Length: 218
Image 1 (cartoon, rainbow, N blue to C red):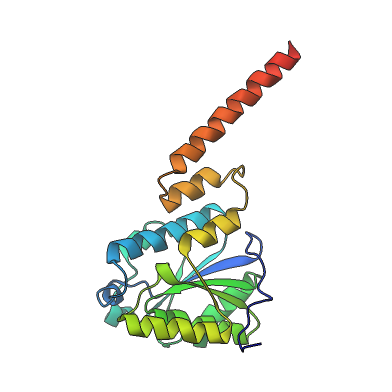
Image 2 (image 1 turned 120 degrees about the vertical axis):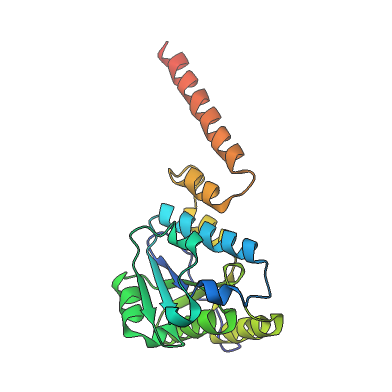
């Protein structure tokens, strides 16, 4: 069996997962080359909004804002009340405050997204694995400065046991049930074109149920 096997990774739930957002800063976004910037912003904001709707803890860290600028405004707008941790270390996991914030949640499944994929995402994701966490790297809510760097970063993470995932896969896995009260908020946050259909179907079946109850009562 190869090193970094993920056969023991468990199902993500709203009780065992947390989200770590690393260095989604204005200056760093200017260097992203492997994904369209508007798509990247949509993906990371959608992921964040959906997990907040599911009450999954979110931890935010930036690095040297005097150099790389502030958090992108699209994320700032949805992170009301979530305090960011500004650090100077390249690897977010080398900052004691970040590690303590993660451990304070009591959760062991760490969903990570960052700019860049091969450094700001990969380094803490792999370091957390060594500390007993299971890391999930959200590839399409992260970005790199060349496709080669991204590819090598993903390969290195997989060899370390990090699980690569997509932003919508994570949210829907945690949602788990389309009848959950948060379903409408989650699908709406993800911006999926069929989200309104899901809501419409819920209303329809709710009305049908009420009519059936009325018929039985009569």
